[in-house]
Structure formats: structure tokens, C-alpha cells
Image 1: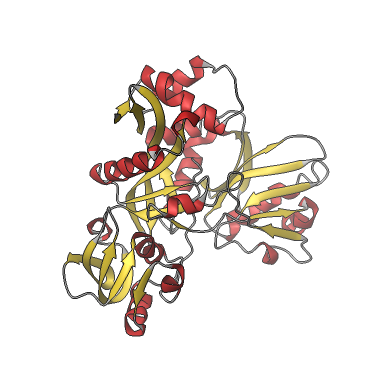
Image 2: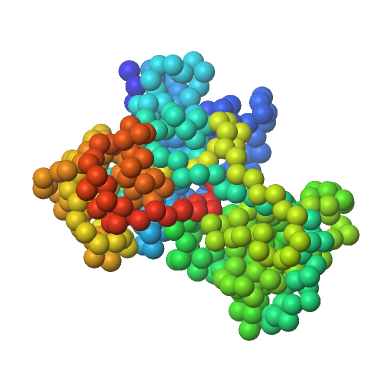
Length: 390
């Protein structure tokens, strides 16, 4: 007999934490309970545990977030910590848990969801589609030295991350408003992430306001400067931050930093030697996946023009839906469908990661050429950038 319920407070430590620790961490180990209890107070997480005859066998956590979908900020559920005890594996508990969590997120008003899969094909069965791995650039800081001669206003200041948390947050929230696919945690979660005093934060200020930042760490002299986040609102702030990296020429050998879809490192300076790497692999380097939790909740997102009626075959959002766009999307149930889409097919169109012609080839739907043309205009291709790791 199985039961799935939310766990709070100390029950998270008793039932949820041991399952996720065994699945994703070196073990056996002893937890720092003081630190774990501090995280319990953050809130904005829903921890679900499946019990089989009273024994905890599977768990999943939903992190409350928002996500930019084509320019509209939507409530998002970030699924994390999905784990099953070895004694419960191969018994359908993970499927039961995910089915429950998807319905719960929808009932909580979350319109979309994202996760980092241990294996993409497993989550594809639940309507998730991949949006591609975040690329990283590796370069030599000396190659950026010409930027130090650029006549740009502003300055860069260096502190530990908690000291400039408000500036970092302001830049990040501004970036989210203009970046398709970008997700951010709810306020308490975001504040906790910015409380890490082990991280450097270099903030670029232009006319006295924060215009960009780097968060990073240096593990050893002569090694690598590893950037966790690289955000800026224009060429001036970018030049200031890249110039800051150039100042580490005689301290580190390489710089590694994440790239947004708009970043073109080969154009930053002349004669740059840069390697851009984008890799995804089960377990070690998963690329994020996304899905739609509520079709009516998509109303109002920016889209193209036209009208299409589709039948969505999906346990959560299935039905016949008419999509109409004239700058923003309207959604109505019913109509005469000219295409059939799976849940992942719908997500692929909404996020812009696949062309309609790709859907039949992936098993994500069936549609004729005129419908494909209409969907192509209504949901133009786009490149999502998730940012958050959870």
C-alpha cells in the first residue's frame, strides 16, 4: 500500500533527506544537521515522499520559481531531488511520484516546469523536452587584455557575494525580464543562494548603477578562474567585466565562463583563442528539460500571428485547444483540430526548440504542411536560457 504526502520540518530530515543523499552524494556520511535545519527555514519548497507500507521509498522536491517564456513571466515548478531507495527501484514508484508531482504543480498554479534529468529519456515519458546544454567558453585571460585600453565609463568592484547581493539580484531580475527561458527562484531561495560567502562577486557599475556582474572562484594559483554567472546589460558592462578577467593574466592560466545565447566570444577581441563547449551526458552533465503544466496558463505570452487548433495527447494537459495570436497568445478549448501533439511536442513549440517539421520525426505529433506553416509563424524558433541550477 503506497501513500504520497508532503513532509515538513524535521520530517524532511527523517524521510526525504536520506533518500536524496543516498542517490546523489558520496555515502555513507554524516550530515551537518545545523546547516540542514537552516535550509529548512527557507521555505518555498514542496517535498513529497512516497511511503510503501510505512517505509519512505521515493521522494521529489518542487522549488517555487518564475520563468520567462517568450517574454512573459510565468509561475514555474523546478523539480529536483527525485530519488528512490534501492529497495523501491524497478517497482514503478518513481513513475507514481512524478505523476503525482506534475498534478500537484498544476494544482498549485504553476504553468510550466523545468528539471535537470539523470536520464533525459526517463523524463521524456512525462512530457518533458530538452532545451540544450548551457555552453561554456574557455579562454586565456591575456587575450582579453586589449579591452583594458577601451575608453568606457564605469568601474568594477570586488567583494564576497553576500555584500553585493542586492546589486546581483537587481541585475539578474532585469536580465530575466528580457531573456527567454530564464528562471529565478522565489525570494527566500534567491536570498539563500546569494548568502554564499565562498564566492567572489565582481560588479560592474555604470553611472553609479549595477550593470553587470561575475560570480566566480579561483581554486589555485596558475589554475582556472571558474565563473558561475556572467550577466550584463550592454556592451559597456561586458567590456568592464571581461577587462576584469584580463587583470588575472599572471594569476591564472585559463578562464571558464558560461555563455548566454547572445554571447559571441569570438567577436569580443581580435586574435582570441577560445573554445566553446556544450556537452550533455546522463548523470554527469545533464541538460535542462521543460514541459507545460497548464495550457490556459499560456494565455498572454508573446507569439506571432495566426490561429491553429490542435489535439494534445497528454495525461496532464490533454484535450483540443485553439491557439490564436496577434502579438499575444489566446487559448480556448475546443475546435476542429488539424494536428495532434504530444505533451513534449507542445512544449517544444512553446519554448521554440524544435521546428514543427521535426515533431513527426521525433514522435511528438502528426500534422500536415499548412498546419506546420501556421505553427511556425505562431511559435517562432527561439533559444531558451534557464540560468538556474537546482
